[in-house]
Length: 78
Picture (cartoon, rainbow, N blue to C red):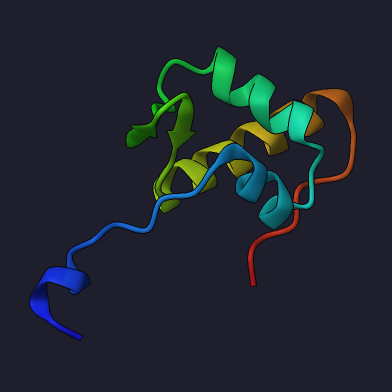
């Protein structure tokens, strides 16, 4: 692996975030659309791309929503 490839960030789409968190896409999109502190790291055309930090923030927000609703929590990534 060269130094150039080591610095390339791994960015993911909202669909991948939903899959990793095992949540419906509409819930992830709602959090991404309503939380101003969770911003895309990049855009590819109309796609918004997010980093790993955004995944953690989405997980936190979904857990907070679930806690307010007394629903199950979002499982931690293992």
